[in-house]
Length: 94
Image (cartoon, rainbow, N blue to C red; front, side, top):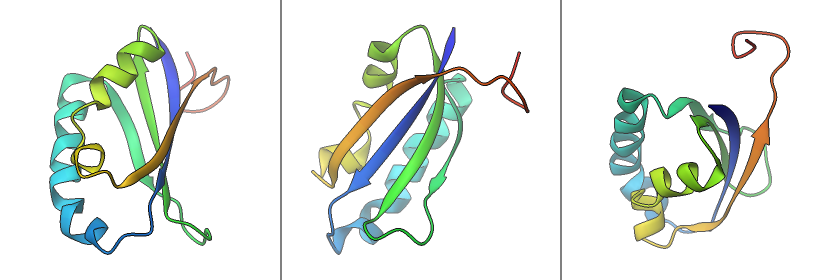
């Protein structure tokens, strides 16, 4: 298993607030499955964005786990960048 940082970049769309509760419910299911380890919005950025820390076998597994996110279904993501991460210090380090 490896860690992956997912950078969500949202579209500037007023529906974000409407869909956000379903998005967070979906993310809670990923926490229960052990895929999502942490997530939250970025503060003070020009365009709405968030970071998700996932743990999976590979980037494709992360992509598959996030496929049913309501933000994706409602076309509210501009893009989602998935990058493998190697934490060497702190709570995620092995």
